[in-house]
Length: 546
Image 1 (cartoon, rainbow, N blue to C red):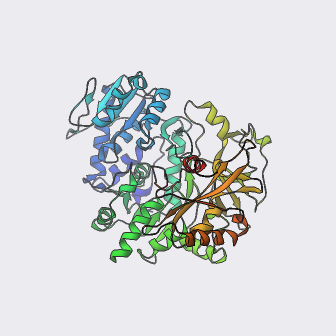
Image 2 (cartoon, rainbow, N blue to C red):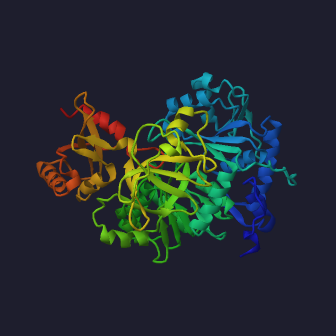
């Protein structure tokens, strides 16, 4: 083990920066869009910490951060953590109205953002009525803001890091709102540290990696791992708009060795590379998550990288990441025995020491562990988890806590209900079946999205499909409908509908489905552009099924 890998006892994760600054001050922390060494980054964090404190931000200050991923974002986040303030990260992709609703409920005390972000204050001043400190990172200000100084003195004093208790709230990260109202997930200091350590060991990340950052939170972790980071040349709020040529240039110009990318990002890169005979040979560690990673994505991307490269497909959520992990080579072996995807998607074994179990499906709260009914391997139920990197609660949202948490007096903290369905196989591996809220209860039984959709996704003209339920009467029983998005250049025909019907009738689980609707574009989540808004599709379908 190198001396630089031997971390001191850390209670504040900004101390990871200080550690690498002490031992590797000239090593690049950021390579693109600007080059910043760990020594320079540490100096900037110290300088910003003093400046933010002088502006009135102190330990416990609830601080909204709306700055795009880049140098300022990472410096500000580490500075707030060093002070002991509570950075609040919200996904602008959820839409202005949803953001304003969230902020009115949250009532942040400080707001750091770009000039464009500060326009939100004009859109609804009531959502910012508790904000006393407004700081802009831009070159101009609106009324009531103060600019952040970008210059760093040649010599900067060391700002003493706030000594967090492991159970103390350190940050709030909002869910994207893709599967329900956006919720503020409480990250404790201990949870953040545990995530940094487990991602390093589970994904075999060394301090010599060059990381391509396509997601800000994981970019934060990469700096705590001692990596050199390349900020992907893309709009991380709208990843579907990425230009694959730019990302490929990032990877090849800096010989990136690892990257995180949602399945959509990997798909876009694979399509371009395969069409243009481009390889990504420097990559040796690829992590893909955020939505189910289908085997077709893995098979395509595998053709771009070295045979020694490892592709991880962890499963998790903002509230608990990672929960499970499995690598592509293992998946290919498993899928030889499970060729049709009709048993869900294998998401691997739980990451030790996290505990994951399956309970009976219910939409009702489970108040205590004694009320939870565990079900055996082979049966589909709801996935629940507990462990050192599982969030203890939501911020100021007792109703969400009541629905998502299960009290267990035998353990510190609670079990967290993932809201996802799955089952264990005889080998202790979890298989993902879809969101609990998106299951379709018919007169013949319950249908699950992932295995049903896999049947129709096999058709060569289908880009993706979505199972939804349409209520035709007051009984509550739903009629299953399959929505189809075709690949470019293909169109709805009688022949295609007949072939889809034959596919459905060939498999027991989809034999009762006879309704097919075609939609050019599916509504999807803004964060990963892969999770389908089946609830919106169901409303659309209900107007077309009689």
